Image (tube, rainbow, N blue to C red; front, side, top):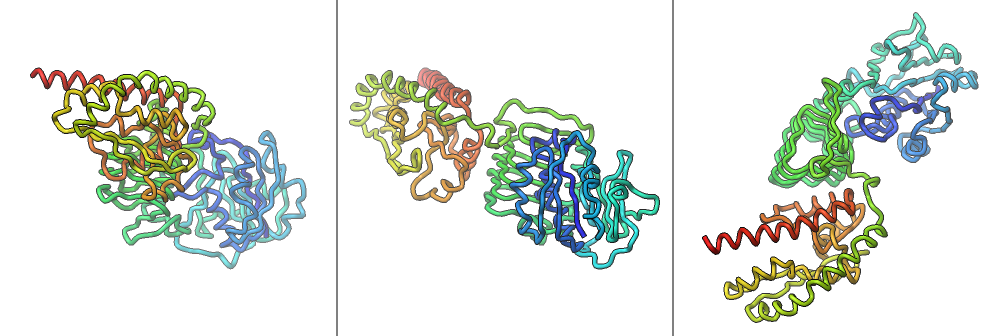
Length: 474
């Protein structure tokens, strides 16, 4: 017996949810294709043919030879303009021993906890809807003509304990994920560690003590939840997701590689990168501000060469402009007790060096320190490090060595900066915030964003100067 899964086409659901081919769409934090592989193994089918079209290279790279599922995978290609049944008609003799044929994007939903089917009746089992055949299974001989249609004597899949769910719209997709997180995920191989409260947590997940988790939950691998975040109930959180501090996630689906900003609330929606979808109406909204929602994909990166060409001359200019006032003020502040504390960090390309951080003097040097900070002179040594190539001009806060060595190996890209979001915050950072910012910046950064950070830094210094002056005269 063999299986044929038609993976081509670009259905509307896949287009709305992102760039992945439909077999790789995550359902309950596992690619849809995996559920079909799991079913094939349960039915005793070892030979599976994937008919590729759109996204062929990504599907083949993911599935490989099928060894992970105990299957033997082979591949064919059919242009998307051809009818799916054309492949079956090429060599009908291949299906003489039986066939499981998946024609359209669909999910093999188990109606109970059955894990395998040993005996099959001869009549075929088929699932169809108004748009035609979805899936067909027959243990006995089947012709190519019969495989592509649902005959009158075909039995429903319910007799096998299955319900084939066509994935044609976001409402069905959302409802399916909610069923899985509510408890049906136990009928399949779980995508992580299953707890007694119905939560399934993946690997390498950061959960700070101040975060509030309300089961049931499905959380994918390599995800990070910020301090004071409220997640649950009934939340499917994909892999490589960053849910920032004080955000609220409730009865929602967050797809892989999505950033949810600080304080953002997502209730009853699907978050796919920078896109928010309402499963009830099908409406979709693309979020422009990357600090509210963003896709943490590699496609958003800018080349290091481009950043160097744009930012290195600016770092040199800042050093030249600040050099003279620094030489005048620093000796006076040093005499009052001001100094630079050096923190061992990992620089660009992992090279270790001491990162200078300003320690202000006692009250005796308050006026001079005020001017020193106003001009941003406390950052001059950092700008010098950027000019000589030890750090970028803008990035995330450099990771401590050796305290954050593990995080360094987990980042997609490491971009330590002379300036970071830590330099524009007025409040003391909460635990875990530096790690979240590092992971966020590693996935989403741009020259425009770096320039915005630089302007916000000097703008905040000017606003702080005005506020301090008013306090002195008040």
